[in-house]
Every structure is written in C-alpha cells, then in structure tokens.
Image (cartoon, rainbow, N blue to C red):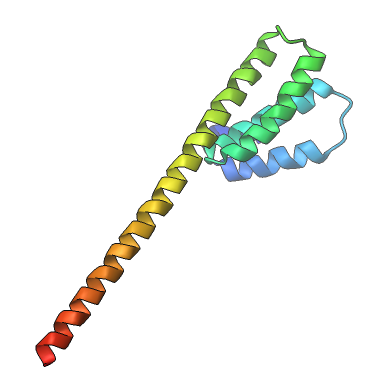
Length: 124
C-alpha cells in the first residue's frame, strides 16, 4: 500500500491497507501503523469521517503500546484533530452546497413560472 500511496494511487493503497488490517498479527505496533496509513489514505480521498474512525484505532494502539508521550502517539493525536476539523469543515461545505442548490432550483422554478405567465399573456 505504501508504494501506491507514494505514487498517489490512494484507492489502490487503501485496498492494500485494508487487506493488511484484516490479517492476524501479533505485532500491535504494526497494526497501529497500518491503521495510521489507512487513515492517511482516507484523508487524501477527502473521506475524513473514515479517516477519523481509523486514526482513533491507531491512536489507541499507540497510546497503550508506546505511551501518551511518545512522538508517534502525539503525531496520531494531531492527525486525529486535523481529520476531525476537516470532517466538520467538509460537512459544513456540503450543507452549504446543498442549500445553494435548493436556492438555485427555487430561483429556476420561479423564473420558469414567470416565463410561462408571460407566454400565456402574449397568447391572449
């Protein structure tokens, strides 16, 4: 997955990371790294909600295995906050876009109604 991630093929990288996460491993740190990479791939695809969910798993592993003060745990915490902020921002943008689309549709419907009225007046 790391090679595909480096090439920018995030969908393929994600598939490999997900496959790796399904395999049994006795190495908890490796599992954490796989989750961290999976979260980064989701974030790169603007799938921030999924990125948050997976990064939480990475953070939990790192905090248990390495401790709260380890650099990797702190980095994971920072990523988690960043992904949460991006998820909120993306959700707000989607809501804003949906509202704008509704307003545009209403304006178009109103314009069509006015045109229809004018056409009916001209026929009289």
